[in-house]
View 1 (cartoon, helix red, strand yellow):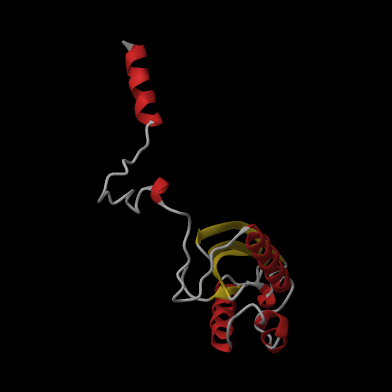
View 2 (spheres, rainbow, N blue to C red; view 1 turned 30 degrees about the vertical axis):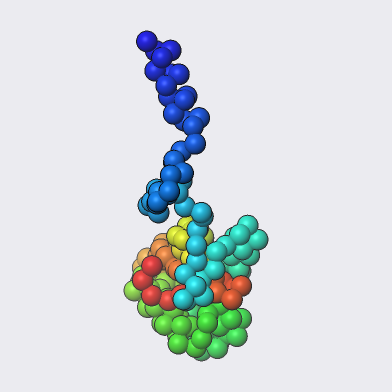
Length: 172
């Protein structure tokens, strides 16, 4: 009995499925094996990422977060840093991100709004040309009589447009 069931299963799997009858719509898009791979949303310029794009993203994101470590975020010199601004599409995006970061460090009572350690905890690719980075910033506690460290976790969004990865401010 089992041999008949196995033979029937092999016959079904081995046959040409789905049938190529006239008017057959093919596999629905919601089935994972019916897709042709990730497709970018060309209206916004988001691109499909290949292996080189993933390696580029990794290197670019790590360089950005390393640049943030040991810097006073609430200082004018850091705000005017041209290298940090190159990770954002425009001035408004940089200002939004920078204000949110400075506010997070202030609310967590970082001493001098400085993170002495920036740890990238996770890279997550959400879709074609979109990624999230979960990062943990660690600094000295700025409250009186607290010789401990404090930390804050953030999740930043990144998008690839025109062959380049950009930090996108806002909620992930």
